[in-house]
Picture 1: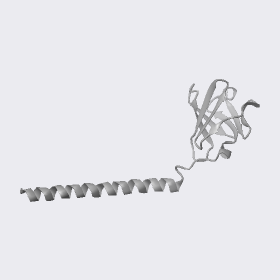
Picture 2: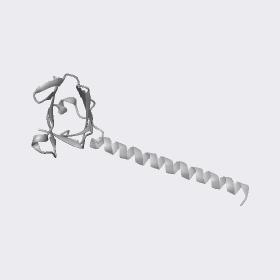
Picture 3: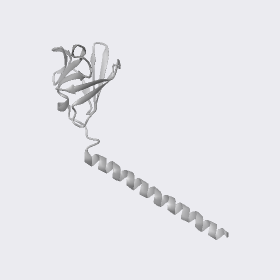
Picture 4: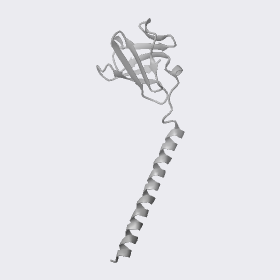
Length: 127
């Protein structure tokens, strides 16, 4: 193979790699755009987290529950904290020295998974 042919082959390989790269970037962009359009990255407004949350999958005598409102977080009818953070997918607040963190588990915002404290996997449903 002559030097000119080797150069031409190298140029073709580079062009092919550039073309494949553009196609790959286009596919990734299309997938991300479709996910945005379907609401996969949408975050809930804070008002949607308001309500009574009850732990599921445990006996009723052992169920944990809490209520979120504009005024703060309530457990057993008592206000435990007037400050909480909600970024659209994660709820966090302190009760005493204990930090509680929950992640929204579904698009409807009707299910929370307790991340902290991690005694066991706790799922809470909105009532």
